[in-house]
Length: 84
Image 1 (cartoon, one colour):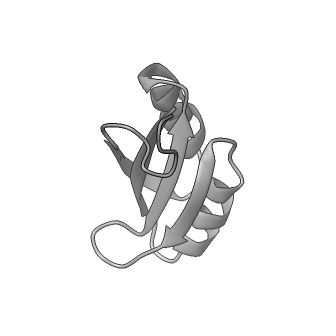
Image 2 (cartoon, one colour; image 1 turned 90 degrees about the horizontal axis):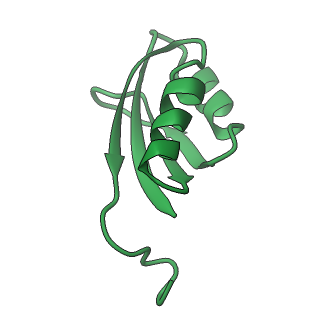
Image 3 (cartoon, helix red, strand yellow; image 1 turned 90 degrees about the vertical axis):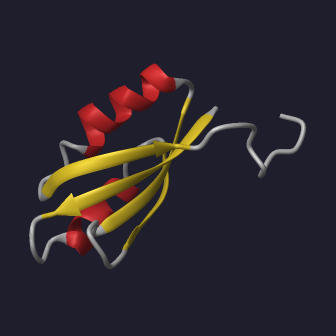
């Protein structure tokens, strides 16, 4: 499984709403409101890079209030699952 962090910029005042909607998407492990150039950060998981792209483009970017995303795939083995 491929994990990634997705940084999400939202419309003003909609970060909480976007974070809640993103959390409900299958493949999203968590999402939280943050401060800085991006308003929400989400940890996602997909079977491979193609599935990750589909998840971001078709589901995360479709959440109302989302302006743009930046996806940061995590390279290497999963430290949460030694030997996997």
